[in-house]
Amino acid sequence: MLYPKRTKFRKYQKGRCKGCKADGTQLCFGKYGIKSCEAGRISYQAIEAARRAISRKFRRNSKIWVRVFADIPITSKPAEVRMGKGKGNTKGWIARVLKGQILFEMDCVSLSNAQQAATLAAHKLGLSIKFFKWS
Figure 1 (cartoon, helix red, strand yellow):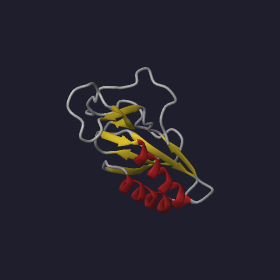
Figure 2 (cartoon, helix red, strand yellow):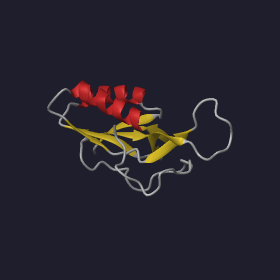
Figure 3 (cartoon, helix red, strand yellow):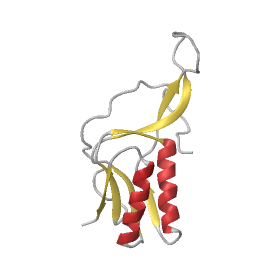
């Protein structure tokens, strides 16, 4: 599971995911990348599921970089609990993703394999994404 060892606060406010990413839109490590086409939230389970799908497609002799990290806690109250009495307990972790942000980078693989892996990862993530290559 990907989540931080410690945070400044135990619970955060929800916040909004809107706008475009100013930095983090260029490939830094690999030849191929997966970029988000819309803003939203991705859970730590979705990030890990997409990473596993990509690595299973490539088997060995490949490099994968995950460029997003789930660092914001999500809280929820238990079922059948009355209103009030404070905010609920931490249920999971999310990453806020803006439009144009790179999610994954890949290297040491062929173009067709990278495109197929991006399709597999797109099914795991809850956002629309775009596959692109270094130019």
